[in-house]
Image 1 (cartoon, helix red, strand yellow):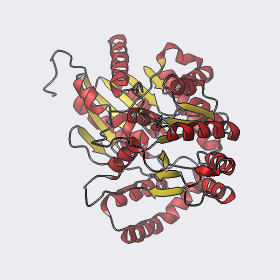
Image 2: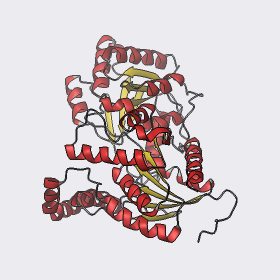
Image 3: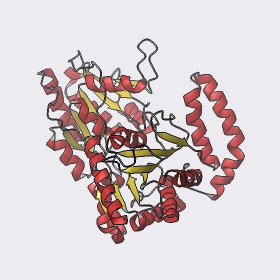
Length: 442
């Protein structure tokens, strides 16, 4: 029995299903972990079920459960080993041995089932969730992802126990330019239908994602919402911007073939050909990842000698004790211009990179390469940042030239009116939404 029950403002226990909970540096984790203290402050008692890949929470009741399929076990083990084995050579050896043991079963699974590696996590999430429902009698089931398996577990639990279910969708579940298997598309489409038909409320992170989900599933009606997640106030400690001897552009986050620096490299190379006086006055810092194949090929085609510095994934600094994430936060605060890569797939019309919400807290200028997303362009323009079509090399060159001239004349100051999106706002909307759901279910 919860000791807070009966207190003014108490909103009951919420069973939260989040595959990636407490995974450091993961957007799918940050989206929910930042909300937990604020949900508690609003009178919610969270009980979390997650995968084993993150850190066990010491504040809230947190149950970590594995996937049951070989692909899920392989995914889990990679992250679990990384948490416990710091020596890179030892990590590779143990990871290789585990992969070898799983290989026959993994190949058999892949021959039959063509889904995301986390698909089977719903099984243990369901059984653990069922036990916790009997124990805690939650007022709300809240699935968030991230991994679609969290929503399937939420649907099954809500159907079995008759508890109101709210669903938070980080990305569009399906889209027109699908690159995965037919089975994965059908599975994701089925889950989207179940959410739109049976969730008491569901929300997406962009206006277009919500609009297209409604087009595919008119039954969603007014139960569908758009809530921008925001991020908690980052701890930049004493980090502050100061102009250095070079103009620093920083990209912080993952790179992939669908989201890369190729156009940026091409535009900067062309600009330096036209304005060679800037050649030794610029540096591109790449944090949290190495260059992807497309970016590396572009750099060979449009060389920028001595300009690109790959910092990669930063580990805890033994001298200062600062985590890799803390070091990147401070680097973001100190850089001249932050690079926001949106991609150029049709999917991007329904997607806003979560990194933007962190960037806005830095107060530093942001240069965004945006693809057909009026909402994202509006957010950038309202805050005085640069938004350029993701494939427009000439437009990007013009923006870069303007930035160089602003840097030369000391005009790249902090943006005092960055107006970041806060987790407090998102939580207030979610709690209000859940309150209406609970009243309707009473």
